[in-house]
Length: 451
Image (cartoon, rainbow, N blue to C red; front, top):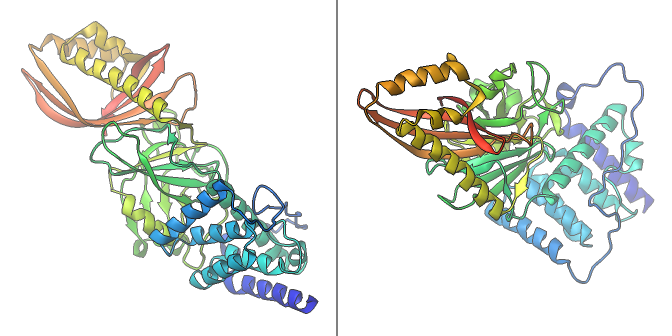
């Protein structure tokens, strides 16, 4: 039995050598390090005891059914296969778990985490398993491989916590309020969970529906991006601006990239700097990377980058990036929509009816737009209104997106719409964007400009 155990460990070490040819290029060792920190245990599931069960708990069965459905819809959903193997192990099905992960290791040979967990499950036939990367294995590999084990443990923890604490479809991200009929899907990033959620637009008056989710890699440094080179992923409301195919990119970006419009109008107002924040793939020599390993971009595996492409429309798809997603009920979702849409309608009507005082009261003291602040905007609009005998203003294709809250006492919404303007001396249509903030109980316009 001891011979089998040693043989299994030798195979795991060999797999690290075969699958990690370019690991040092992407995760270089710090030359000043002289010791390898002891990895903290990463339990496969929140509890440590894994016993055979004659019945499956309803929540476990629900999760198993969800993973099986994911694999039914997409047999190449490698993460779903990995998590299914772990869940089978938790439920006492060691043989079934090994079978699942063996098949996955053949379909995704570069997925190093699979090899590590498969090796752990093989060792579990001889020893009790309570963490990823057994201590005996950690003592059998080189210093560089021990550090790589730590990275895999961190990745495993991020994947497990992100997926097994994921929403059940009942709650809704606060950020997704109203989506225009022309927007089919929206992307929501939860930085704390290293998770990207895809929501489908179900039409006017209906909450969006969760249709997919992914493990993602974020910037090396936590927190909101403030300046170029700080290695942080920004938080805010952004939009996919273009697509860059892999043949036009260095190998690091994998199968392609979707740039977003960072810095947006609000970022520039806060004097944030830096460019080149993308959703992109992974170096093709690898399968995945540790949770905090990019220079600020949102990184997916290449297979999942290809999968997410079906949900993306250039110039339309919003990407809401939050430190931590705020989940709300359907009732709260309806209430916040009604409140903000009513404020937007008050703004439209006061403008159309040239009620100057009511209209200007809709603007924050901190308002800005190109060439104007609150004071100069009031003087400009007073002059414009004096020349109008009639105005007809309609709004279409309205989208409302809650901005990730920096100040809970001053929530902010990004309103995108097409403005149809008719008057006695000017006609025109414009794709417009407002930033609206709630001040002392009232919604006011903080920014106004073209999309």
